[in-house]
Length: 247
Image (cartoon, rainbow, N blue to C red; front, side):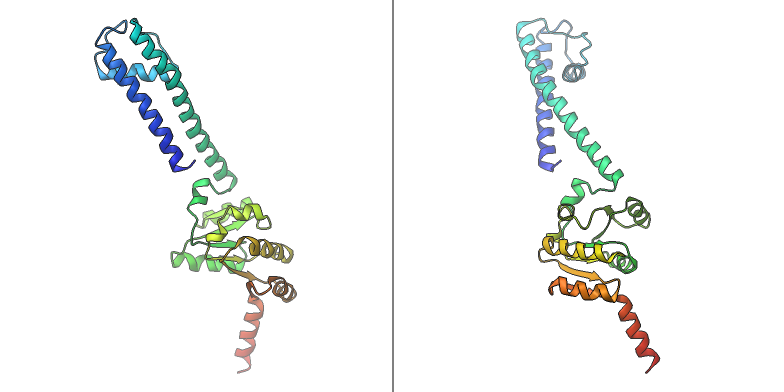
């Protein structure tokens, strides 16, 4: 739920409460009820039991003006009260379900900006996550495995269950606001699909893809069309070792 919606519900409920408390207190001093409502405590009590539909019946209107007041309070108050409770409870339950399932909550989605999206938790992305944490950079890790997401959360990372080959799901991560998208998946075919999706949704975000094999590197470079930085860690490591051995 958006902050503006929460504010609107809160304001509506506050107005209803002010109407109920003020009206019952005013009319209570003028004999509008079967018992005197001459304290704010009784006015608050009557208003709350009325709009919450409890209605104990220990206080009820006897004058014409009090009856009209209570009818308006019931019609408007109950509607506003129940709408507020349902909206807030529904938003809370949705958040809980999203959290349990590993999905990103609506609030978390709205907070994404200038972040780095690490797609997959292969070796390179895990090392990168540690480095980004040390620099206090804003980043998230996405995986298609809920168990892996829970494991990453236990390591202290913000991890979510997202299908990186789905354009719809990737768009929920605000990729157009991201600094970069780093793809590091074990499966070459999924890496290629993830790259194609990233090219569609990334906007100005930099795309970096880790090629798991030499063959995959060749295909990925061709498919990236120059829009992604392709890195083959194994090839870089082998070149460094070869240089070191034969200096």
